Image (cartoon, rainbow, N blue to C red; front, top):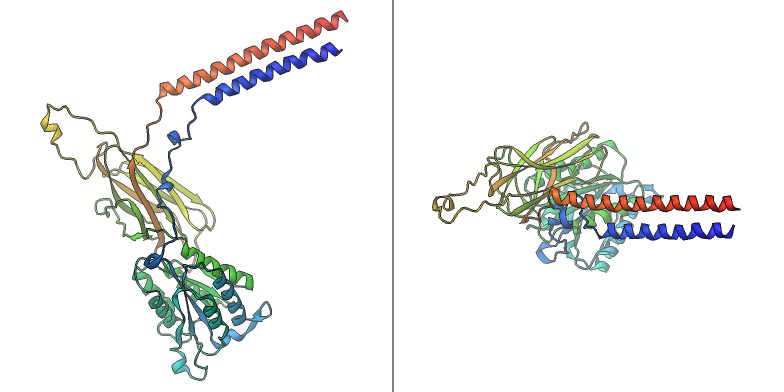
Length: 459
């Protein structure tokens, strides 16, 4: 019986060696990334490296804090609304990086409720936008006491001035417990005015009172600029949302997106060079852009569309590359069925190599290249078409359109994948290795079985 146990063990060891040999041969075969020869980067890699910008390019945040009389109400975790806000702001200030451009503006902090004339003009800078002296900023916040009225519209205009001009991303974070009781100006109209100026300004609103009218106004303000609205229910939620707004402002490109207006057709679409672009696209709209691509170059593009307001379920984003005649060259799609931060997709397309003309044929070598780029031309202008299937939920503003960010790059074309013959060759090698391994394994298994039967008969 010992012999019967030893011999199969040796055979099993031989089978294991054979399996390892087959695996080694298989691992030696060249590998290919699925659809990306040689592991070439995808379109998403065309985004410029994200670094922390400084100086005029640094993102700026201005926090508007409501210090009106109603902020003394005690209904959040057993604390007054102003106490909850002050505690959360302190935590945000503590977490600010040294290079942060941060400021604080108040509304309703000076004039009492009995003085509406001056109270409805009551908005002022508490801490100017710039590098933050944390001790000074926290001390200023600690001295605030609920006092007067709620001139939100004027405060929004003041915050836009606090943030200044330029190409840097600018964000206003409004913390309030009530709707504007001093209009005009209506805060929704002010937000639309600021959005129409195209100054990279986004307004996030945080509501501390659970009132339908207040919620509708704050949602309207956020929607107008592509910001977010949150109905705050706890101390932790307010701190988290404040930190997210500040952090989101810091996550920007060293190269700020350039504003561009897509067209409704390829013929009059703007001509783009490699870079990052921002635009707004209406619900279920198609927007066109053009990119020149020369022979031997590869176009890489990625687009993100942000559902910055309540949208219906089941949506999608489509990015197409077409020639001037509308013939599709390649496409990328993304779909979803729930609220997400963004719907994104990308594509890659390589222009065909130019056909060399004979040196003795000057007519061919002197022929001009068609700038419109006919289908199949080696040098052409490619049309990028961005489409979306978002639909707004009821009572949601449709203007301005959804924030859109488009990344475009034109680089040297990636190496072409191996041809069909080479692919078949690799397949046959693998098939032969597996067939040989299977044949040898079967022979060994049969020999071991016959040997065991012979030993059993002898015993």
